[in-house]
Length: 308
Image 1 (cartoon, rainbow, N blue to C red):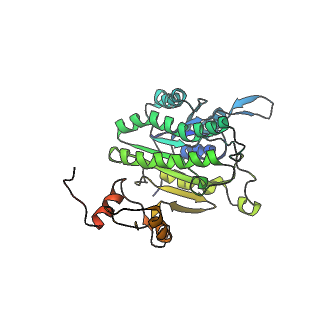
Image 2 (image 1 turned 135 degrees about the horizontal axis):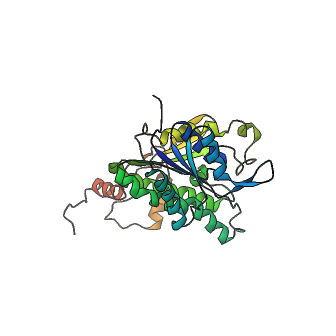
Image 3 (image 1 turned 135 degrees about the vertical axis):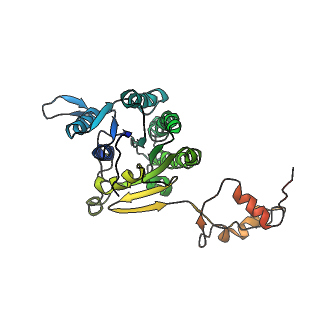
């Protein structure tokens, strides 16, 4: 099987450097027409400055591909919509959306400025939501779409000084889980990638012996697969790092405690707290919001189908 994107249009945000650049180049190499989105500018050898997005778009064209540059921000609904409108105006469709744009404003929570927190969430979480919202009707109407959002280990493990980043990165997973339900029957699949690669934004954060193998080329294959027709799964969170790939999921144990008709006090909860937090026999969460409490009620033979 060879994965190709011929006749497909892809949008990649944060594509002027780092992982985004590698995603854009890889998609183009496999036949996609690419909207390269980035706000940054770079200085060339002659001292002149050029849009980072234009630089990558030019590189794609020089390699025989098709690409246009976009310098619109993902952080407002209007500018996010403009990124999608550029794709529609140029090629009449959008098939793949890679929500990769991000910024860092690391600080301990005690010292964090709320404006910095808002900026981080505005790009990582709201920017992902705005751009996905702008793409959504086009993908739904054509009955096809592949969306990948960028999450991080920080979202599900935490990391000192990254309250805003962690909040946003877990937030996009919640968004992805819901949109996976809404898009499935319409042919629009959405997944998350949790990459670990050394970029300008993350260089020096890990031991040298680890960073040696944390290259973009070890992440790109997972991204390309998730964005392709070959992938038929949705609502997945896939870690990609140092040549290894794996799935991250939420788990739950069996509810323990007392019957739903019983009086329960904090002291009674405390009595069984060790069981409540024991994940020794946990299983993957595979149900809707109401199913878990319903199962608990049924387990105590108290469920009434016609109860008002």
